[in-house]
Length: 160
Figure 1 (cartoon, rainbow, N blue to C red):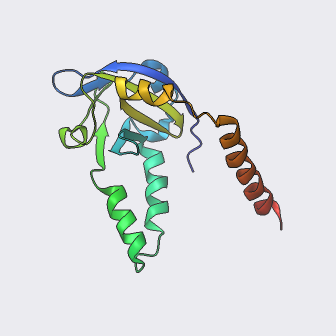
Figure 2: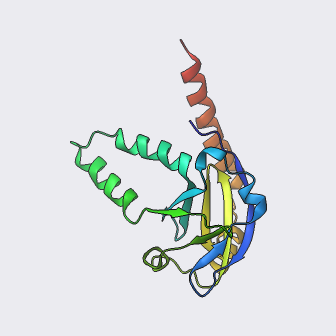
């Protein structure tokens, strides 16, 4: 199972052929098991998500383990995989972003790559800045709710 812990925020520019250069600081964080391959897919809140190849394999196994005889699971699997595209890193560290995926975002030229956990969100710079400028007023309450829930889950998993 991949153990990537990607971090950072990187500004990029989309060239005329819809390519971006993967920043060297981000590339250094990608595991060798990714083999310089990625999968780009639709994300939530109007972004795209770039998965290193090894992470995508793990995520795919998780989705494929769902019971496909359950309609909700099939709907989710279809929606999740809709648009997923393998993207190799070229010799100049560029990634070609497919036009069909760009059409589902507000991405123009200025891009922010927001790396966290095991994935990289690809955002239109203006949209991203607007999103992060709206820190929840109740951030402390939100953090407590989410982290206490996680703590309980972890405690339950530790019980033999």
